[in-house]
Image 1 (cartoon, rainbow, N blue to C red):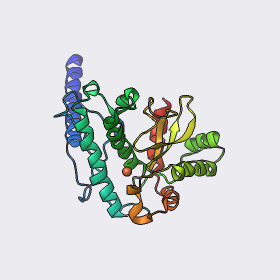
Image 2: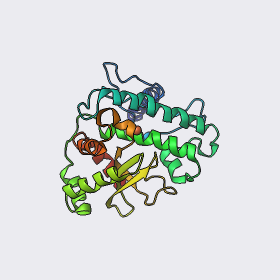
Image 3: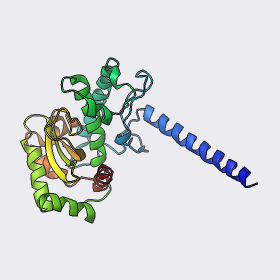
Length: 261
Ligand SMILES: [Fe+2]
């Protein structure tokens, strides 16, 4: 009798698990226009994977998960729409094209690919970076969530930089002083401490063979002109200052805790 109950429970649980997996798989295969009324949750960028067969298991553009105008006045709706639907979409398209010949990466997730990537593999480097960086960025500025870091994260920031103000200054400097296009990052280093860096183009600190100092990014700011030019024109500094008001610190915290494990 007990065995029968256990068997039944396992059957129910496994069918639920299968259903959940099937739904997840389905949701990651469709590109949802984020301007529709109901916003699906963004794909967790940590799960960005491609399968063994590039034609059926291609990387997909995750839905933005919120309205294009949700971040106004800091980031205007048109910038968000072009940034997500055109720029990010193009990185995904070109990454999938590059994957058709980069068979050494078949079936691997982006983070594994970045760990192995050689600097001269520019198509994967630029478009894989573009896909990962933007997928993360949409979450880091997702509306809602804590507007300040938790006490634990704040303590970690203060331990690494001395104060929140000093962290903001160093991060802002990294963003403002990045020549041309690139990103500013807050990372967890191999020693578990936080550090700030900046990278050119679509590189990121996970690309251990590419960057000066590797780490696990927990916050990043896109300082390509396509991210801010419509609203801020040449005033990148104003965009960087405004960015701090839209950071979703809950998302940063999630990545911080995952990076420390
Ligand atoms: Fe961008």
